[in-house]
Image (cartoon, rainbow, N blue to C red; front, side):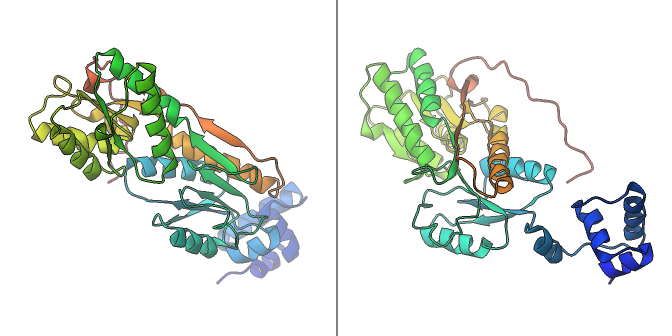
Length: 346
């Protein structure tokens, strides 16, 4: 195996000079840099990551802690995280917390000393969970409430988006609007439920607990909840699902039950995952720039890393936008974007 000493010997310079060139950490003449890089390439020298981290005090790795890795929402979040991290020379270690406090604490301990910072998305992450996390480790909470000013946080404007969608459904003449709620103890789910109730209140409609069913943010949950709503003596005429996955499950249940959408039931979701526009009918939803959510989280984390976690903490919020498509009774004017997929990739 070729070592840094071999490169230094071939280039007739010190090991320190080779290290400065390959790490970009010090002044070296342009000609010497060119010669060292040419020799390193010819010898196929690959710097040792562990040794480099000892010198730079950085691993160039970011930790990501998510409650789940399944579905288009998390796929888009990860895409935004990874693209932004790689653009700044970092790579990711991604862990699923299994949505439990024990799983979160275990994952955080496993990442300690191996990453330069952590983006964490979990309803169970609190001050007690962070007891063993060094105060010098930058941490960004994603879609979770930051208590106090000790942590950076990035959330979605869930309440405003849900409220606006319910207002739209009511404007179409719907007086009985049901909601398929997200997972219990989940911040996004709670805020979207709050927005739903405020939307009804704005129109002078009293919320009915029978129209508020849990779906757990899954397609299966949305499917089961829709069937339960169809079994009510007085059915709703519109269903607002707290995410698109549940809305897609609801659409499937309605189709199998012979209920026409939007003729007999309007359906709307939240997130605007890529699949939403391709549904039949295309799904009305509350758009969140999901990929940008991940990108902004990494940018906040890199700011903490650069400042050695001595920066003033930020609380940022991603805006939402109501996107009207055919599933709620309006004419969809969108067209699918042109494909950018390389046909040679599978």
